[in-house]
Length: 349
Length: 254
Image 1 (cartoon, chains in turn yellow, green):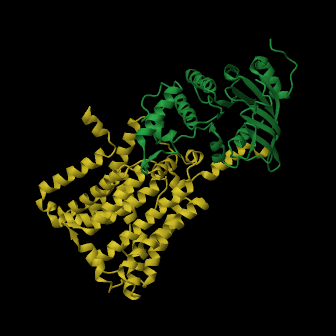
Image 2 (cartoon, rainbow over the protein chains, first blue to last red):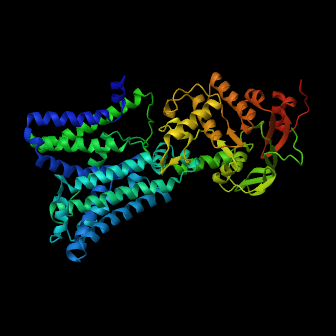
């Protein structure tokens, strides 16, 4: 009975997979579990994990954010440019990077809530434009000469734990607290589950949506700082495709692309599983081509598992397009309401 | 049942009108909704029933006319105004979130907090108490998601959600529209329970049999006007059909 309850925790599968992969690879190649290798996994996890948590906020509202990868490049270039070329102190550049991410996230939210632009479309704009902006800033050249403080930030270990991993932990705990312990977080789930019901219950729907995109943008800004420390320069081509890994981590962790379902613990486990597999394939000398295939397969298994779980609960998910692709649908709901209100509809007027 | 000057009804509409562009959805509507009774709103499609309850719910503020709450004139500019007075609306399309459980749905938008955090224990107890007060016993655990409930159970949860907020008037739009026979009986029993507990109930339904079974008073709408209000004892199916289609009747209750 007790065991059954544990296996019914939605995140059970992905957490088990993390443990199995870790033990399995360590048995094959003991160097996998070396502290230095674990630290490398930790640094990768920090980058992808923070992006995954940010993107989770938008997916929970039945939206999506395709921009994080490009935003990492753009915010890190802005930060490095201000620091190396304009002499702005590093700490201010950190704030600048996060603020730029948050402002762009706010703009996403603005277009989605005010103009009813589908999240998929508006963040696709940024995916393209921010990647271009990062290259345009220095005509494609990397920015060297950034403050050593970036490197110090990433290379400092507290009790053997790299600072980025601590940053990731803080972000994860903060996200968990917000989503599971505050009323605003619960309302994010309500918005993702049934936006019309949320509105009728008096929830400030637009504010919750807007906030989700601000969080996602700010998370990209944080990662923008961390990658400078990782590479040692501002690199305009960094982050390309990372948004897909972040979304994959969220989905593997049990976040439903239809919105309103999934927890931070699952996202953390999902990101960890991706990083463990990534690293394991390198340690085991698997060709990089097959690494992509393996990651795709993991994502496929996660999506199928999600469907199976949903059906076992007797809850066939709707066969409509996720709102992230189809737009928020509030316009059509308003039309329906107006039609109902006039009774017979406008054609009879 | 008639309200006197000393005893104003819970809700009184006087000369309420509402237009959408050229469409006159409500024309000079007068209606009293007393406490502790079920007032049914009958009428054909497009008669203005839904518009009327949306005026009462604050979604469509009327263009003209007066709304009196316990005799005092009030302005309903939004759903929050209506909720503050104690008017709760149960919508036809069931405004519940499938992904949340019963407790979370019942407290949606008004979550209880303890030291700044969600107070799930207190919310769960209050939700369970409200459901048992209303004799809603068919739902198993209050922690199951709404998606796993039947249509009748969902409707019961939606009604319980309205009651939880110390509502004085519960407005319902077609609460039995999508339900089977047994579930309809369950929901109608619940409607009667509300009135017995002192709530005013304003109910829209297309189903004449349900209406006659559950209502104390019947108001009939036609082309945006309330053409007749009478006690249940003075109405039968044929009289109501006459009123809905022509606005008048010569029949007596058989």
